[in-house]
Amino acid sequence: MTRPQAEYNPAPVAFDTLGLEPALLDGIRIRGFATTTPIQSAVIPIVMSGDDIIGCADTGTGKTAA
Image 1 (tube, rainbow, N blue to C red):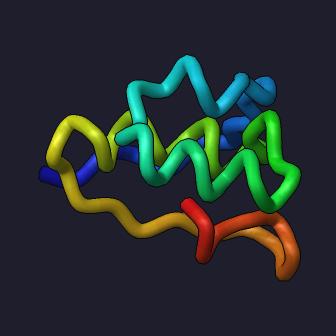
Image 2: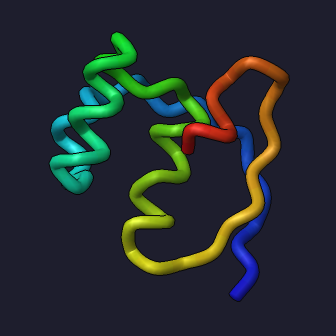
């Protein structure tokens, strides 16, 4: 399924509200992260639902961690 491209700049959310596995959430906390970047806010819920995505964002915005 292809979704249309659109300008999207979601607000940061707390990682502990995303339903991540406890071990993953612990690793995120240990590294000092508390909230998502916009690209993470946009893609994590989609990936958690089982869909594949392709996302574009500037270098240093958290794509790899998403």
